[in-house]
Length: 150
Image 1 (cartoon, rainbow, N blue to C red):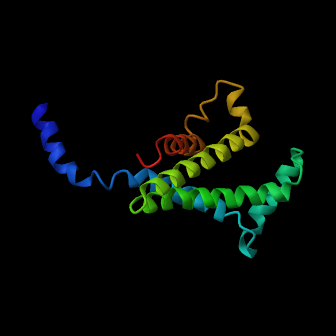
Image 2 (image 1 turned 60 degrees about the vertical axis):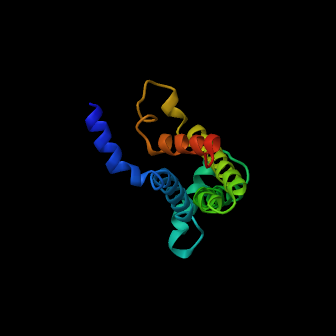
Image 3 (image 1 turned 135 degrees about the vertical axis):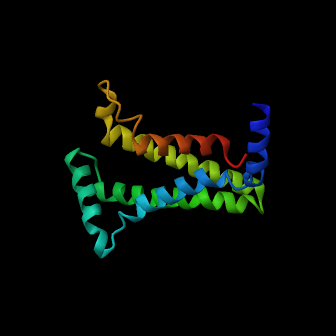
C-alpha cells in the first residue's frame, strides 16, 4: 500500500499546481456560457424570449430586467472565477476576494434558479437535485465562496 501511494505521489506531484485550475476552469467556463447562450444577439433571442416569457408566467415582476441580470450575472461570475485565479498569481488578496465574490454570485444565482425553476425537486423523494448539473454548479460556487484562492 505504501509503495503504491509513493509511486502515485511521484506521478502526480508535478500536477499539484495545475489541479486547482480544473474546477475553477470548469465552473468559470460553464457559467460564462450559460449566460452567453442567453445574450440578446439575433441568433440567441429565442432563449432569452423563452426565459422572459417563463418569468412572466410565474409572475416575476420586470422579467426583462431580471433576465438581463441573470445573463450578465452568469457571465460575470464565470469570468470572475477564472480571473480571480489569474489575478491571484500577481495580487493574492485581490484575486482571493474576486474569487470569493464570484463564488458567492454563483451561489446566489444557483439558489434562485433552484428555488424558482426546480422547486419541485425538493417536494418529493426525487433524485433530480443530486444528479443534476445545477447541484454541481452550486457546490463549486460554495467551494469558491468559502475557500477563495486558498
